[in-house]
Length: 122
Image (cartoon, rainbow, N blue to C red; front, side, top):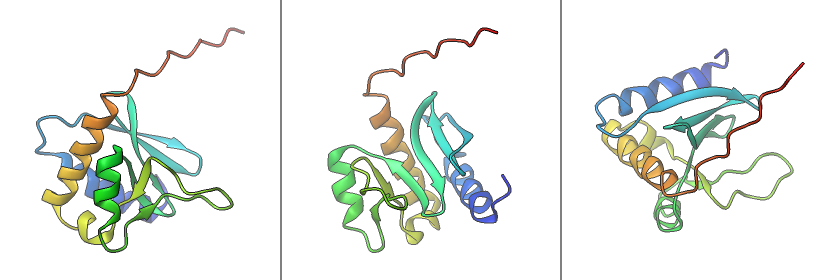
């Protein structure tokens, strides 16, 4: 990860997730940022907007009531209906961040498993 903001956010996520009994997080570079996965299911992103988490409708509504939380929106695209940018005061607090990471992880495990990609043949 070469973007200092992404590096700092990833470090915060890893620190908050460290003592969680349920989180199995991995990161993959994607679209100029990084996708965050729990048990191989996409649950968040690290992009220029910050850390955004994939949340249930109820949890999205709850997080959006927090100051500085907003739907993830990439340039020229409509706001996301499933990803919410986590506000700085939550990112700064291990317990709060862990709670939101666990909510996201729990939610993505209720969704259908991603279909396996076909391997490319030469």
